[in-house]
Image 1 (cartoon, rainbow, N blue to C red):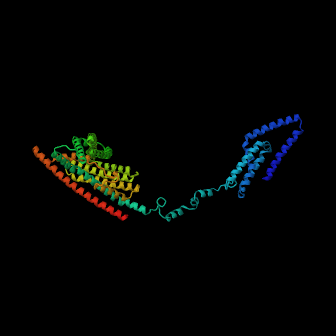
Image 2 (cartoon, rainbow, N blue to C red):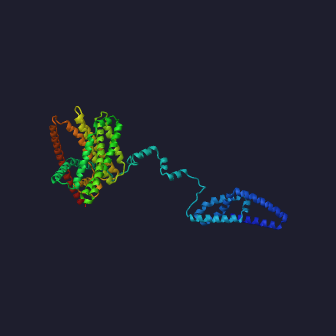
Image 3 (tube, helix red, strand yellow):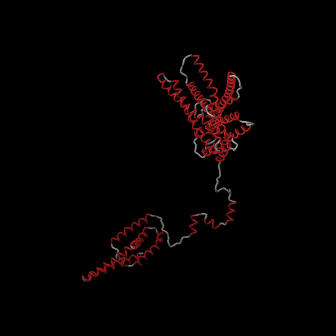
Length: 558
């Protein structure tokens, strides 16, 4: 490399010395001719260098850069540049000596600066190796480096592969992993523990709703009669208490709903719905179920607002009585309107279910399957928090009670209109409806708990909150309470059962019929009161036992 550099430098000095001697010994004419020739030659070189400027500059820089690269790179890496040096040297010599002569001092200075930068970059890149171009690529080696199974696929035959797969362990080891104790416990929770605890919470919630329904039909009338008797005995109008105002508000809502439902022609609605196809029945029932949940939620808020206003009216000062009275009246009107709308929705839903049960084209099964599995689809694959799951359990308890009121409606319609042996068919259809609802609730809550990583002990906490609510223990979070408004279901049941009582009254004078109405009313009231006492006492006894059991478990765990 040093010999090549000295040769190139000596050649450039000889050319410059010859030009200097010729310039001193020539005459002016000769000097002009030489200048013209030199100008022409310079133009030719310039044009050539403009076309191949990249080659000139690259070769000039590469020749000098080899020295710097060898100076800055470690000894073991100098061998990498030997081939490049020879190629660049040959290209530089083949290009011609004339191009070397015409490189001016400015270009040389620029090339030297660029060579210094290149040398610095090579010096900073320690350990970086350029590709050795004289070695050919080994395709097999390259594929072996990129894919570890390349050599395996070339060397192993299909028979050997199949034998290794047979003796390699689990057949599904590539798509499944081994479970631990936590995964095993989750499987058994989904199959056994979760259905039992979930159904226990829903059943207790159903009886809590039944207790509230019976309280509306038994406790509230007795309280109203007692209040009226006290006011008549005192012979003066006094401000009622908050509980008494609330009872009067609920009674007004119930009477309004029953009176308006009595004006409804059930047979007309029944034949309108029966004329629809199975798909339309499914759509109608789903729409009514959605509005039922909306009215249930909104009705609970309206009733709580009414009770709050009643408490404010009972405890307000005389100067604020007029304002609070108008607030109570406005809240009462809103509560009556929401209760009437909810009553009509439940009545339409009951008529739709009755239509499916009476139909001969298996419309009931189509309705139950489509409705229940759409419920699974809309709930199972969603993310739920603990509070949302608790609200979902309470909604299922309320829905279970609404289905029971619908079955009472179907029973009443069969008593009035059915011919022949109908009771066995009714029991079969009612059992099908209940079992489908039971199965769907179990599947839904089991997989909701599985996907959201909820343990079965959480449902025990839900049951504990429900038992505290039964004992009138105020929960820390009001959202954890079961909200149920029995006014709309009570209006539907009274509307449906009143024609049954009227159809079985004996004929005779009006007084005789009034006497029988009184007797049947008293008998029904006694039966409902007895049922209320049994359900209420059973719930309280169960709630007391379960809360004590939970407290003992907490003490042992602590």
